Each structure stands twice: as C-alpha cells, then as structure tokens.
Image (tube, rainbow, N blue to C red; front, side, top):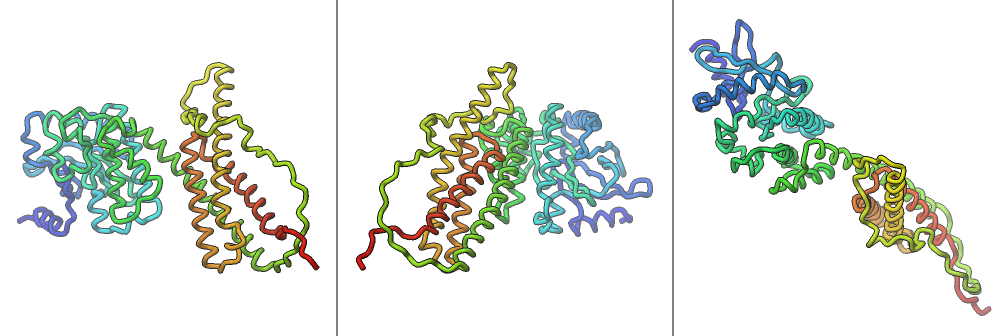
Length: 417
C-alpha cells in the first residue's frame, strides 16, 4: 500500500471523507500537492449519457458568477475519474455538524448559510438550472469563512439517472414531483431549501420567521409553495422586520409597565373619599369609530401595493386611499382588542398583587399585544413599520387613560355623618 492509499484509508476511518450524491469528497495528491477532489461513483460514470451531462455541467457552472458556486475540472488520476475542485478547504454540511454540532447555535450561522444559498439558487434559476437536493450531504462549507458552496446541480443529469436513485437516503430533501420524474421548477428548489431549514432546527425550537416560511415552502402541492426564491426571500425579510418591530414594542411596554409598577409601589395610596354623584354627561364619541369603516367588510385591501405599477394620478390617489383605509381598520381593531388586553393588568386587583403575580400578568399581556399586532398586520396588509407606530400610539393612549382611572378616587353617594 503506497502513501496515498494509506492516507485515503486513514481519512475513511476518521470520517474525513464526505459522502455526496455523485461521489466521495476526499483529498488527493496531485503534482506533489494535496487537493480536494470528488471521486465519482463508478455506477454513475458507466451510465449512458452521464459523461456528456458532466461536460455540459462543467461548462455551465464555469460561467456562473455566484461566489457560492464551486468550480471543478474533470481529470483522471491512477485510473480513477475525479473532479478537481478549486483551491480551498471544503467539507459537507453533514461533516461540519458531525464534528461540531454546536455551530448551529453560533450567532448568524444559519442566516449566513440560508442567505448564501438564496444567492446562488436565484442565479441558477435564471439559467434554468436546479439543484433539487439541498441535503446536508449535498451542501459544502468552505473552511475559514463558512461560506456555503454548491458543486453539481442535479437537473443537468435528470436524463441519465433517476433522481430517486441519485438521492438515495436523501429523499426527504427532494420535492415529491421530482421523485416522481416530473420536470423540476423553481418550486422544487423552494421545497428542498425549506426542508434544509427544518433540518437545522431538528433538535431545537425553530424561530418565528423560519417557521412561517417553512410551513409554506414544504407544501406537497407545488402551486401552494412560494413561486420563486425571490418571493421566499422577500417573505423572510418581511417577517424579520416584523420581529424586530415586535421586540422594540415589547421593550417599550416593559419599561412603561415597570414605571407604573414602581409608581404604585413607592407612592402612598390616598384615602378613599366619597362624593355626590354628578350630573350625567353626554357620551363622548370615539375618534376611532366614526362609522365610516366596517372591519368585516373593509378588510380586503391590497397587501402587495408595492408591486402595483401606478401610472396616473388617479390610480395613485386611489392607492393612497386604500392604504389609509387599511391603517384606519388596523387602528380601530387594535384599539378595541388592546383595551381588553391592557385591562387585565391595569386594575386595582392586579396592581395590589405581589411582584411575581404582577410580572406574570405583564408578560402575558406583552405576548398577547405582540401576537395581536402581527395578526392584524397580515390581515390589513399595512407595513410592519406603520403597524408598530400605530400600535405604540394606541398603547400609550390607552395606558394613560387606565392610569388616570386607577388614580381617581372612588365615587359614590355621600355618607351620613
């Protein structure tokens, strides 16, 4: 056994070789230097049409500009057909997480991988290429900067090998229509990327924004998924923005509630004074309910206003009217339901409770307000920034009103001396 054979045996035993759909990733000595190569499976090389597809893939990938595309050259060493990879240190995602499972908890790691895969997949779709299987064994990471890299794209080989055989034991990452032999589409890669995100969080709770896009991305019916990677990425960006706004809202509510709690804890309570009941006053009309909008019938507004091409002044004015209408509906609904939520905390019973009970009720109120804002934002179609601004205004107004009521002495009939 020569030195190279000993090295290959050692790498196989230590788990340093990476099993991929098209072959085995390993190091090989070429002209006195060690390079990463993909040693192709013999059964694939012998298939009719595979070598022609490989040459076409080598040509098409050489023209891709994405930083996430790993380039290669076809070569034969010691009678073995291999793909010489460009300079660098590469491991499959499966290898990386096997060696260091805690890396998924590293700040920004999953976001960097997914954003990088979005970049290259968008370019692939522009050239009618589809990766089809974003399994951990079919995605590479570059050592040093953890850049996600792709090598071979399965759509080029669909005529020479069945996808169900190529991705044996990786079927969960492949769209159902692809396994059935149908022509792949953008939605096929959307499904596979959704499954990869799901795999990242298999041992932990998935974050809010990823949970929402995965739910739609992995639908069995391609028509129910995102129609493109760009649409999937835009949805993720919007959900991230909503999450940041919600966090800001939570922080503001927490500060306000802490101030109220300290006020009632530190300021002495005034004695209750009874007064004669005054003359009834005219009921005040709510500025938020002038009867001009019906939340049940007026909630069908345009949520994708940014994608509508506005050519005339009339169309622009109509669009502005629609969006103003949506904001009014959001304000009206949020005011009504937020008032009920805040009332669970701003009452004499809760204010006189112990600190533990008070904080538990406060946390529950905070979660309900954030959930209410998120749901109404989606229903009315306004932007998350506008929703956050209106929610803050309404909460500030309702909080002041309830503080005044809590500070007002109890009214009743005059007692007899």
